[in-house]
Amino acid sequence: FVKWTGDAWDLGEFGGKIINVGDIQARVANGPYSRSAASAEEVLAEFDANGDGNITIGVAAAGPADDGAYYQAVVDAAIKLSNDKGWSSPIIIDEIQPANAADELTNLADQGVDIIIVGASEIAEPLPDLTEEYSDIFWYCNCGAGFATLPGLAQSLDDGAEVGYTTGYAAGLILEENGGSTAAMLGCCDLNFEKEFLLSFTMGIQAVNESFEVSYYPTGDFPYDFNSVPNATEAFNTALGDGIGFVLPYLGGAHEPVVQLANEAGIPVSSAGASNVCARDDLAYSVASRFDGGDYIRAIFPQILNGEVKEGETKTFKVGVDPEPGGLICDPTDEQQQAMDDIYANVASGMYAGDFGAIKGQAYGG
Image (cartoon, rainbow, N blue to C red; front, top):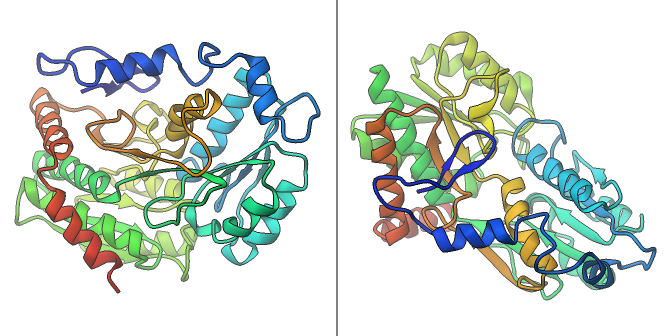
């Protein structure tokens, strides 16, 4: 499998074989900022919705644009895409509450943007109406599983159970190495997609050792409050008192403060979305749980700009098939890396499809 080195994908051999080379080479040749598939003039003609001779991206984020985690990944990718293409600076509205999403997205659309990136499903409810009202704008959302297909919306999604399982397996290997037996997942308020991640995370940890346990600690107000630092701090301290050996802060604005606390306490910690954490020198991560909206933008926008992905279509990112999603260990031993490679191959083969289906049924079934 390809391996994230911290600032680039290592396309070399893993276990004596190369996986998805054709797909990877295609991504390199038609990379996020390449003009090989569509010229700048063709892109401008297609996406300049207001005819001002330039392209401006609008970004709608449900959490802080500088959270260092899930929300910031999307914002940073939009900024880099715009800079590298020579487009106008993006217009960013962050910390959008679900109740205010319609007003804030309308505000964004009225500012002369040509493309709108909606960062998450919690602020996507107004999109059926807005994609019709502002049909000249190209709309994209990383909305995730369960969001309706709309004719005026391009979407991407991943499989939360696949990501959760591989993250859990990585965490289990860390627990095994350190002699631990329990992990904590800090989340918002037991939302359905949190349940999917928790159940699959637990499945992954227990695939390493069936005696390992996972506890869930809510930190926010219903719905979609992933940003309460005081509550997350209290939850982490409770988990620490319970004797945890690993923590997954499945949070937004409260993520980095918990990582800092975990570092101070010597508890191994995972990211929640961001793929670049293994290379950070300000915070220490043991595991990268990668469902990075910025990575998805970098992968899908070349396809959007050259017409391969259109409004009304959805790109699904699969663990073991696409290089973007999945859990990985930041500094693995050779044995740990081989174990992770094997798990990725098993996920890609569909070996756990039945288990993942049951998890989704339990999480979303009521």
